[in-house]
Length: 155
Ligand code: FES
Ligand code: FES
Image (cartoon, rainbow, N blue to C red; front, side):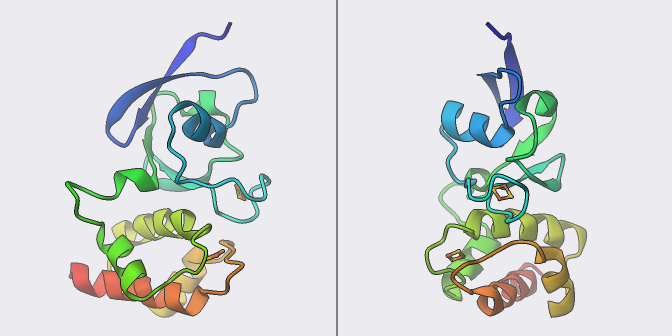
């Protein structure tokens, strides 16, 4: 039986058991009940599983859970604070920047990383950063607008 692996998730110390090959996405969803990050392609092609590791967006379907030990993991569940949505979550709601919402956690986490690095991105920079995230519902224009609005509210 594999030894428990410590994960630092959304500011809390958690433990998982990670058989060889278990992805971080599976560990988050199946062992820690953090189901915000979504499984879609499972091949790093869609972005639905995006979480942050040490502040950088990663496709958690491709990351071995064991390799995340000791690193700072952020998921969409950690964005809301004391019942108040993150400005990006609020802007996505205000602009209806989703339809089914399956892609939304991935877009949100990538956008969080973008706004930390670049607080006032242009629409071109937003599109470039989110390039590679797929939204089958075609909410792209509203997603870009929501990120722009969140950035303006944070200023
Ligand atoms: S499920 Fe990970 S990139 Fe598609
Ligand atoms: S809102 Fe449905 S996939 Fe993006």
